[in-house]
Length: 248
Figure 1 (cartoon, rainbow, N blue to C red):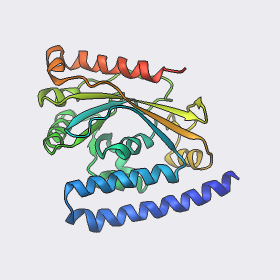
Figure 2: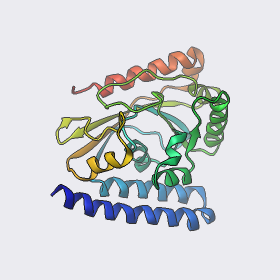
Figure 3: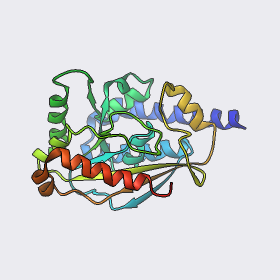
Figure 4: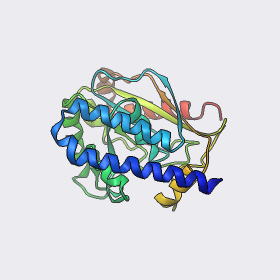
């Protein structure tokens, strides 16, 4: 049964990816930003459906103005869970660009890639974030810098919080909770030495994957500017920790 489920989902997913590549190549260059965002949102919803992922959203997401969303990082699915609710430009490590097919797709929708280990990387990414905010778009950031098993939250890196603070942009913490059926689970967490293909097999071959996305209270830019990026990052981290640990 696992092989059958994996096979039909993989075929459907490959068809969706092909559609996405065609849209990026031929339609995106000639349509406006609003239409590109709507397509990205619909495509993300289709991907989650074909992967057998049920999503549940809680809280109030900011949709009418630029915002920096900071969230715990569990899987490559995280990007699509958020973009299914609002098309979002994510900051991602440069290695993502090298992923088979998915790397092309996330690059095509404007993902901001950060080169780890380069001195100028933070400054360059911060400037790209500010440009994205100026276009009234949302930016998504994984301050942990890597994935976890989803049952806890690692310490946040604080540098890129300054891009929102210096441009008077509010920050919204977002907590992701992964379930296998009714139980919290790390089954599809993309961690350790696991390859992308191994993770896709775990996801597509089984049913019952559910992700709760909890949009937490916004951290206002005025308050953030007063307390600085380190204290703001700590406040966001604690809010996410409390939400992630809920129910454990």
